[in-house]
Image (cartoon, rainbow, N blue to C red):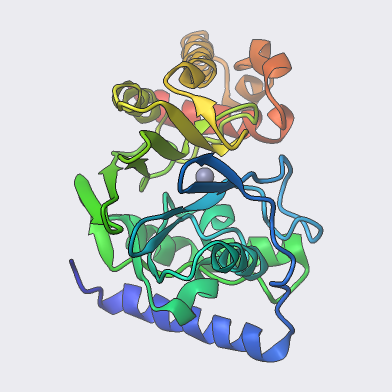
Length: 314
Ligand SMILES: [Zn+2]
């Protein structure tokens, strides 16, 4: 276990201030329980809305959930806003009285972690990729403003910097139930981890796996494809994608995402070789994939730009 200092500690203090400001100034909308799917015994998932963040969905757009062991609970992604986190916390309390010992953050995107402040009263250990504190510190202002713009509210919540960091592999004990965490090099983001509940062979893939909703690239295209090789080697019966159904068969469910990412790489490489500029690439890259994905037009152009920037200097 590592103790954070410097910028990460300041971020944590800022998160506490945001949380206090929010809890003091408004009434918490935690009473409405979200629909939880028990994808395997003790593994609970709230399926996120297939939409952009909005005031209506309160950034509840990611798949989030929790695992119940014999002596403790682990949250796997605390949600996209303070409200989203409060609803997840209420769902846990409606399920079990066991302590919430861990809040695991699969990566740093707001829709997965801005509910973290809802769990501060439980005094859990916050867990994440070893690079996550730096990622959160560098993005905090931008992400917070962007979410404020989307939600038109002060209840955005905030991420909480992890203090238990995953450098490669790490196991967590919930009392007769082991979670196996794995860190990845740059892929969907620069700080992705996955979790396998060994009791049920359930893989919580975070945003290394999209199903139905088009993947969003914020790390490395080539790194993501390499991560998929490792991910597919994970022994699991089912996976919980970061976006899509609450549960999908594993590893079969990785095939669509692999095809999309490989098509994006192929098309962007071809455009670069043909001397096309980045603006032309956004209109053509992976166009054949449009029928297969929801929110395709909201993200594919951005993915093409990220891929172009990565591949142009090879
Ligand atoms: Zn993400």
